[in-house]
Image (cartoon, rainbow, N blue to C red; front, side):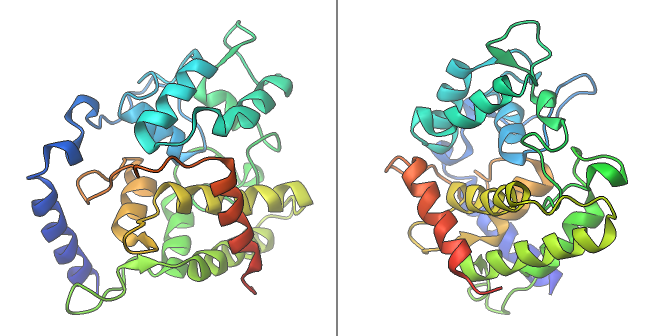
Length: 254
């Protein structure tokens, strides 16, 4: 089935390559260098990889974040204000400036970062901030990311129901593997929020769901999937949009 979905992706890529707006040439993707700062969050890392945030991932202000989430994903500027303020309130900043952060400051365990990540290992098991192929393979399997219909039209999307169940399965797997697993209400809220954030960010409003190809690029390459057809929606998303997605995920029986 992987061959089929790769063929579908190739067709989408060829079509998208003809759309200059879609490739967002002013913000081409670049892999981070060895001295660049990165976080456990693929969405933040992707914005740095595309230059919406400083490419080195350092000395990021709230103003920088406002401009980045608006330009890259068309979120209302204040959407992530609370998360940014939490990082400052938890004294995570190592920049020497109480109003800025490095992306790697978010790596601190049990502050904003949580156990049971969809694409990272747990702190107690080693590296809690770098993409982990083994962890992601489990999540991708639960999401069915490499399953597709033979006609390139069916089974190309992830629904809220599938994403909610994949999140719950990953959380339970991590809990079983990690004797020091944090299953607190805060960790659970972070887990649900992680899924709500990526679904909202990658939601295809025409299809009413999230394309698998977009999710793969976002997590596996920390790349905004312009080549696969992603465009930020014309209607701006905000905390209310995220809250509605969060509620929809929690409503799924898992």
